[in-house]
Image 1: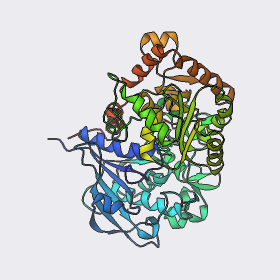
Image 2: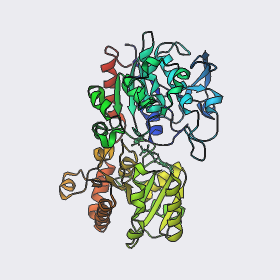
Image 3: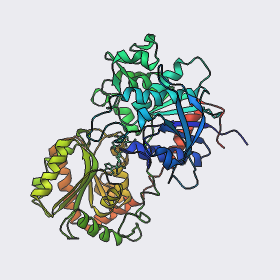
Image 4: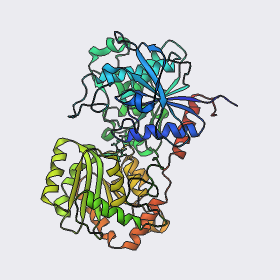
Length: 495
Ligand code: ADP
Ligand code: GLC
């Protein structure tokens, strides 16, 4: 049997161990699906509190030296809990209590302030990945491909390219170009980087060290999470200053749409629901509506459409556009169900709306995995008026759960939601409502169109069924990553 292609998947969050957004979801299902395709994919992540215990991990090898002046770090290895059945995905966790063992989130403390030493915390992650990619890891396993994600592992391609040894090829996936990991150039020596690479054709970006820029410059290949976003980031509107570099990198840039965890997000088997349902029998959806109304203290009325949001409450997501329409839309018979956390001002505005409109606006500020599932099961419309959206997962969860998404035509939203028109209904493609520009007027018009269609339950049902029958699973996208790895390491097959 041919030797398997070995891939190290380097990430700062992995569901269920650590998750702040879609990257956490992607990082657990993609490597596991790759394993099902015969790739020896393994994950590398920081050992945040409880990670070692939840992985039931054991130390591997001797401590590994990382950055100048830092104590070597001990790696642990365990198996990802609750992953794709049968995949048994190994996870290497970097134990450095001084850097990672603190309560709070992966990137920020409980009040939302970034950890002041994030530059070092994620340079260590990047460095360990590069060492493993050069065969200098804690054990005798070394990868052919090091697959990095976002700025947190952006220095890995730089460390690899600067290494004086045989090395793995690198892929950097962009999940969000707005987060760049830009830090003071004074850190160059602490990062163990030579000043010769503090250069526009290196790690320098407008006078700072940029981890993302470094990754984009040095990676053998760049991928991002939808075809549309791959195009958009080459323009000034979406490029956040990196569009020039991305245009130049065009021939090593690929857009591959994310899939969803089709087992965890399945209304027929979801343990968080009041009742299961499927495209064959949607009757259970009403029980979920009732439970959602009860959970969010909404009036128990099965007739009213529920408009939902589950999101980071940020400008990127167009939360301000929605907030600006809530009063006006409440002149119609409908309810709001909102779950989110993020900008304190948005949080406060949603809380205030819930107080002004008891029984009609239900709000939960915080992060609740089970409630996120129940909102998808109980709602009718799901709003994603994002200013930009590299991929977006919730529109796919929504379609799977028979909820019609209302999205701006951008990034992965454009690539996954088909606007409802007489033509697309006839084609069997219609799944939601799409508008062009991120402004209140266009969102309003789109929502009014959606609310009008809600009165035509037969057509509504048609669109629900189209969405529920689409295949959003990872199988096809994981196969595209495998193809990409093969172009970088010709000659390596899968197990
Ligand atoms: P992003 O990564 O930009 O936040 P995605 O749509 O890719 O956007 O992924 C968001 C993920 O985080 C989804 O799985 C969504 O259900 C989840 N999520 C976002 N906010 C919350 C919340 N407050 N509670 C529970 N899950 C949330
Ligand atoms: C980012 C993007 C989101 C994408 C997710 C996973 O957080 O904002 O659009 O779905 O990464 O790739």
